[in-house]
Amino acid sequence: MLAHACPILRGTRTPYRPRRLRLRTMPALTLPDSPTAAADGPAPTPLARATAELAGAVQRVARHDGEHATAVAGLKLLRLSAPCAPVHAVHQPALCLIVQGAKQLMLADELYAYDASSYLVVAQDLPVMAQVVRASGQQPYLCVRLDFTAAELARCALEWSAAAAGAGAADRAAQEEGGRGLFVGAVDAALLDAVLRLVRLLETPRDIAALAPLVTREILYRLFAGPQGWRLAAMGHGASQASRIAHAIALLRERYADPLRIDDLARAAHMSGSSLHHHFKAVTAMSPLQYQKRLRLVEARRLMVGERLDAATAAYRVGYQSPSQFSREYARLFGAPPSRELRAWRERQA
Image (cartoon, rainbow, N blue to C red; front, top):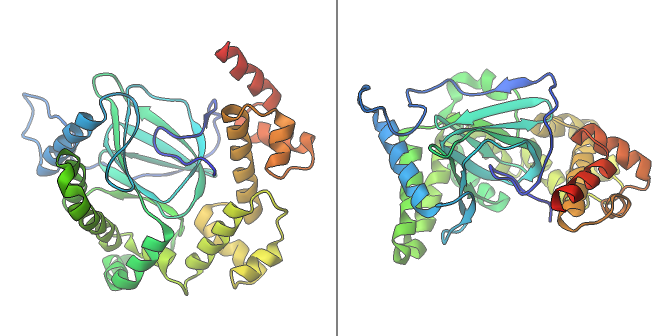
């Protein structure tokens, strides 16, 4: 299984290399830098008060740095007391709502920035590079992550397609721009309230079995009914191009080590080769070949670090036939050849 991400990612860190980026972010809302307003400042807004309540609920569970699994299916709480180096991983479908701090996520050459005024939704398995950029001991980075599956998206799309279609109908031209399999949205009171209630269920374990599925479903509904809910509806609708691309992505995830034949992949997705290439890039910001290459390199790095394989063995395991090609492409993505990184990791462990 390939590693997944957010915000303390199960991946590997790499030095950041500057490159020309397209920044995707949300306008700032009237939230304080920290969920707790200054004592002498103006009264906090209802949204800021709810954010502060959620921060307290998260910190009661996440008392130390790391990713904290919970008794609620799919719910994880994350805490980090300092900014971290960029981490490469494959982000699985999820809602990531930052409660405190800030993070950046890079998909191909696009940079997505979000903080406590916004949230990230990833609707497809996407190879990304992510970095927590604002965190401290006094104000740690806090994030609520709720994982969901393609099957859940499909079921919700069948029920809520009308709500999703109507949510942003006034700005259809903007909806059509990009079509990415992830997006950043502005936090609103309804979504924040539902997330707060889900986290609070951790304080009453006897209620989790009965209430958590209902609140989780409400959170998904809020995402579908939001301004970008059309994206989720498209991912789950069986006849859409996005749904076909989701099928192609699933095949690539399963067979990333096999030789890629575009015609076979297009046939399996019920698309022409040119249509597959166009729509695949619209969703993932990369071609099928680039996507497969990124999967292979991220997994090879995990094998070298996590399972202590040498570079040649890891390369063959993920489908490379040429160690020299693997080394070139590895260095292009991570900034150093695998042999150098292996030496550095071993020195740090010594």
